[in-house]
Length: 334
Image (cartoon, rainbow, N blue to C red; front, side, top):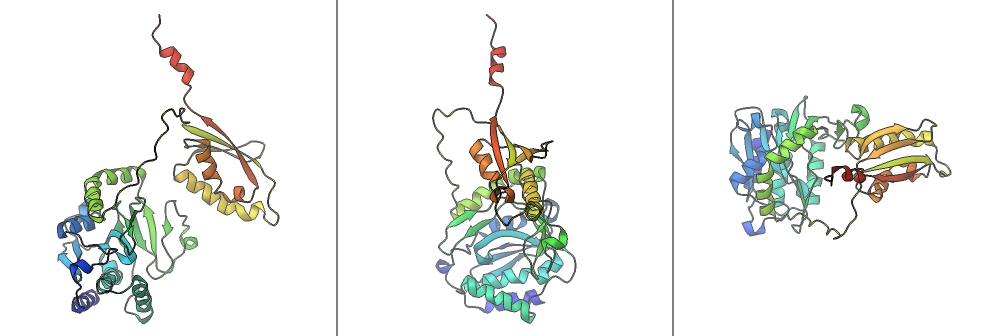
């Protein structure tokens, strides 16, 4: 009933002309928006999910559902992505997207909309989910569109979300880049669980055609790759990073920085930056086998570690690659 009331209220707002549609809330052809909304759900839920689409007056229901899920393309704050809510999420949180669409198309500024939503949580118009539940964001498509219409593509991160109102990373043992983490702290906070690498590759491949059509419509163009030198030397395929003790920084201790050092190093490992991880037997520090194409790339990654920033660790780098002289053995014998 709450969602119907909000939808009815949005329909009573004056509708702007299509030419006045805010660039950060673009309108799609209905069939394309339905396809994009459903892309957030696992394939076995798509045929039965309800779908909401944005038209010139706000969000409207494009089709009824046969299961518990409702899918929508959120545009809140110019952050465009599809999401599929279960029944509890559709009651508690999807009305926020509906309100955002109606207010933005009626001319409200994004900052005013966020203040209205925050006030709604305080006065009870919006609420946190009342029970455990799940939402799907399995689509790799997510774009940030500013108020002038400039588009930036976010890194693909298909994931599943579980409701976690008021929880923090400390509550769930979350670390960004690991098996789970909190997206925010608040009544609409979510426990984010990214899919595995194999599933991610399958999703990217299956969504390629949809990605091309959406990006063509919103005017996104991927940055051109940097020009490569004509006679560049063979790039290293790995870099060995060997730690040694540094001079340190007054007032900082290893014990204070070690917990964050471990978390950041694990994140580099989970992101594929570090392939193997060893400890020197004399206790001088770690040795990393890094998936870097150059020493500069490896140096830039290790420079982010807390102990390196505090000058407690320094790294020496050795770029390695295939044993090229072995090619001699492959040459035909004379």
